[in-house]
Amino acid sequence: MSLPTLLVTRPRQQCAAWLARLQALGVPALALPLIDILPARDPAPVQKAWADLAAVDLAVFVSPNAVEQFFVHGTAHAWPAQTLAACVGPGSAQALAEHGVPANLIVQPATDAVSLDSEHLWTELAPRRAWQGARVLLLRGDGGREWLAERLAEAGAQVQAVTVYHRSGPRFTPEERALLATVQAQPGRYVWLFSSAEAVGHLRGIEPLGQPAIATHPRIVEAAREAGFAPVVLARPAPEAVTQALRAL
Image 1 (cartoon, helix red, strand yellow):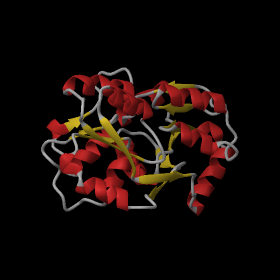
Image 2 (cartoon, rainbow, N blue to C red; image 1 turned 135 degrees about the horizontal axis):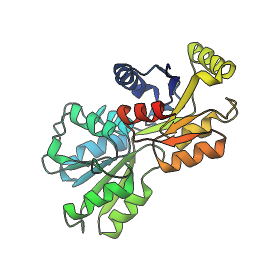
Image 3 (cartoon, rainbow, N blue to C red; image 1 turned 90 degrees about the vertical axis):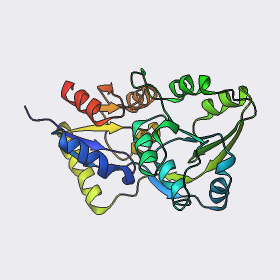
Image 4 (tube, rainbow, N blue to C red; image 1 turned 60 degrees about the vertical axis):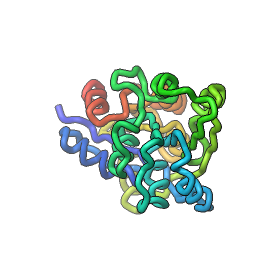
């Protein structure tokens, strides 16, 4: 039996890589971005963060978008040898490596972690060093990773949040609007892939719900179910795990 088409709702900047990897796994997939990523309105704090990076002990990236938008302002700079770079997912880790961050400085949840989130990242960070007096940059969009920032602050770190990008609702191209109309007309042929609870919220009022979905974190599963998707299954945010979940559906 042929697989339904997977709708990848990640920001447009990430869709191409996901579609290529899913295609290699034999999964029919199309992009329908539900979040738009915009550069920081004021680049000065981002540029200052780059200028001060050599004095920073840890830079936390909330997503691949944070990596890309941060490095836009520092492509001529080498990553400091004493600065750790932390992230919660393999996509962010890959983006850091592609921008020249050495593998031994990238900290992320263990490969066998139950879920990829701030809690499991803190499990890796907490024993890494004494955090009293450490300087930490939290590189993010409009909020995010507050729980992790609180744990670092409680351990004595000085945490500075820097907005490196902004999120907005979807801005569909004509082709994407046509795809959405097809999904509405033939819902049984598609399965949604959600990597953000915010993306689920943006879909409300746009798409009749009640379709199956795959979500990459328990909180996103809950948001999708509350929005009316069913069934909703959990998968790690990796194409191989998503492929397994799709085949199970």
